[in-house]
Amino acid sequence: MPIQYQSQRLMRQRRKAALKRRRIAILDIGSTKIACMILQLSPELRSEPIGVRDAHAFYELYRVIGVATTRSRGIRFGEICTMDEAERAIRTAISGAQKMAQTRVDHVIACFSGGLPQSFSVSGRTELGGGSVTESDIGRVLGSCESPERNASREAIHAMPVNFQVDDRSELVDPRGLTGSHLSVDTHLLTIQGQALTNLQLCIRQCDLEIAGVAFAGYASGLASLVDDEREFGAVCVDLGGGSSTVSIFLKNHMIFADSVRLGGSHITSDISKGLQIPFEVSERIKTLHGGVTVTGADDREMIELVSSDDADRDYRRVSRAELIGVIKPRMEEILEEVRSRMENGGFGHLPSRRIVLTGGGSLLHGLDRLAARVLGQEVRLGRPLRIAGLPQAASGPAFSATVGLTLHTVLPQDECWDFHAPDLALDGLSFGNMVRWLRENW
Image (cartoon, rainbow, N blue to C red; front, side, top):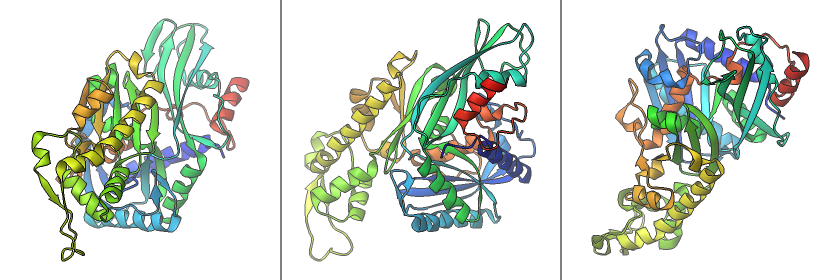
C-alpha cells in the first residue's frame, strides 16, 4: 500500500508533541545492533524545521540523557524478518535507555537501511502572475511534479525539494515571500518496499510507542559524518554496516541519491568462520582485534590463536595475520565494487567535489581507506559522527553514525514536502502520487 500523505503529517504532529514534552527517543535498527538514545530538548529549540545547514549551530539545545544498545535479533539486511524477536530486542534497547535516563518516553523516531531503497528525481513548475510566493504556490508547484513510474507496493519515506527556482534565481531553500513570474522545484523522492516499512511501524506500536518519524539510515549517517563543505560541494557517505551498507550522495546541503548494498561486516565474519572453521563469535572477535585489508611484511610472522573458551583444551590451531587478511580482503573488495556501482548510478562522477567518506563499524578495518581509494577514488577519508552533548564515549565511534545523525534529523529536520504548511488538503488518505495529481487537478 502506498505511503499515506496524511500519515506523514501525523508523524510530524507527534514529533511536535514530543518537542513540547522535551523528551524523545531515537532508534537505529541495524542488522547487528539496535541502538536507542533518549534526547532532552531545550525549551529554546524551535519546533519548525530550519534545515540541516543550521544543525551544528544548535547543538547546545539538546543533549543525550540515555543510551542503550543490544544485539539485533529478528533483523536481516536491515529489515525485520522475525517480528517477536525484533520486538524483544527493541524493547530491551528502549528499556535500557529509559533506565539510564530515569524517564519514560512515548514517541520514537526510527531509521533503518532495508527496504531496497530507490531514488527518483521529479520536477514541477507553476505560474505566479508577478506576485510573491505563498504557501498555496508551494502546494501548486509540488502538485505539478510528475509522479514517477514506480511499483504500487513501494512507499516514499523522503520527499525532499532539493532546489526551488523563482524565474532565474535558483538554489533557493524556501522561496516563500519572493516575487517572480514562475516557480519551479526539483524534488528527490526516496522510496522503499512498503512491507518493510509496515513491519517496522507495527513492531514499534507493539512496543507501546508512537512512531513520530522514519528516516533512511544512509541519510542519517551523512548528516552526522559529512562536514559542511562536503554536503555543499558534493560527497558520498558510505556506511559499512553489519548486514548491509548504505550509499548516500549529498550536494547543496541536500541528499540527492540513496541506495544500499546487501553486504556488510557480518558477511566478512561469516567468511572467516567458514574459511577457518571456527565459531561465528570467535570469528567476530578475531576480525575486530586483528582484521585488516592491507598486508605488510610483518603479517606473515604475526600469529593468531584460534581458541575459544569452549575448546581451549583441544584446539591449538594458529594462523598468520596474512592468512586472515587473505580471507577478509576479497569480500571487502566485493562490497566496495558494489558500492562503486551504486555511486555511478547516482551520478557521483558529475559532482563538483568527489569526496568519499567511509563510516560505520566496517570502516574500522585497518587499511580500508587505502583499499577504498584504489577501488572508489582518491578522495577518501574515514568519518566519525558529530559530537553531541551527553554522548558517551562508547557511542561516539563510526558504528553510531546513523544513530547520531538521526538525532540531528529529529531536532532539526531537513525541509521535506510535508514540512511546508500548505493549506489543509483533506486528502482522505491519498498516496503521495495521488496527492501530486490531486494538487495538479484542483489548484
